[in-house]
Image 1 (cartoon, rainbow, N blue to C red):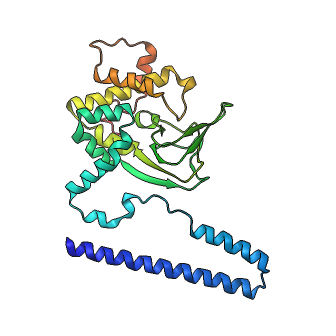
Image 2: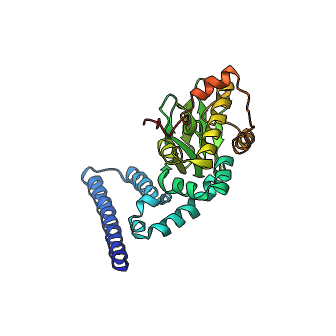
Image 3: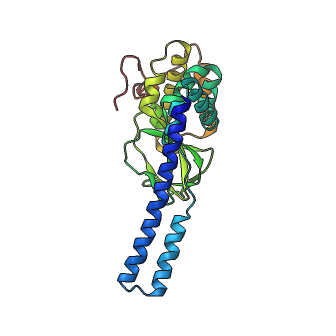
Amino acid sequence: VFSTLIASMGNALQQLRELNEERTEQFAKVRRYFSSNNVQSGLAKKAWAALSLAAQKPKRRTHWDEIKILQHLPKSLQAELHRHIREPILSVHPFFSAFDRSFTMQLQQVYQLCISEISTEQGQELFHTGEASTQMYFVMEGTFCYHAGGMTAEPSFLSTGQWVGEPVLWMNWKHTGRLLAKTPCAVLAVKSKELQETLGSEAGDAGAIVREYAMQFTRHCYNNSYLLTDIGVDVDTVGKLVELAFEPPLEPPQEDSDLESSQSSTWLDTSQNPRSP
């Protein structure tokens, strides 16, 4: 393993040298291009200033999948790192926090199998109205602006510690608005299909809890559909839904609307009907 680590570090240093050489070559080509086309000094200075600024632009957050050397760590150590890095981000959400306290091993699988890290540049769109939704996003860095489609309401701003797109985890969903990065941003994305494959097949209490929360969330959304956007349900209501999921009444009443909403949950009988991509 040690020799593999050394070799990987050597490859990384070689790639860095090649990157620096390529940048130097690109600047030399620009210089020759300006000279051969008689670009005026004032215009050339403006171009050089812009290029220098671009070259000095702060580097975006480095993500796990980009560091190939980490794949050589023992699986147990990878799992420990995943938990250390990702648990504080997901735990801001009441469901993941409560689920982690009761079912640590099951949530460890989520950290490893259901999550990706994404960076966006300023002005980049993460999703738009009508787009098929596949992931819930937790903001790790930066600020997003959310515009609900077809609504005159003021835009919503999302920053570190907030989330967007929860409905996709528990029900069929298309984005109802547009999410735009106001600054360079980084998000932790929870993949809905992988989450259902990982937790939906759980038996016993863990499986019962996640399916019950999915039902409670879907029922609430169905009964309040006129208010629902990608922002989802407010944190206080989410907390109440979590309480209902972990301590359900013995014989919960179901009205017609509740029955209909139950049928729309993508987690209904997931062990026999896994969600299609």
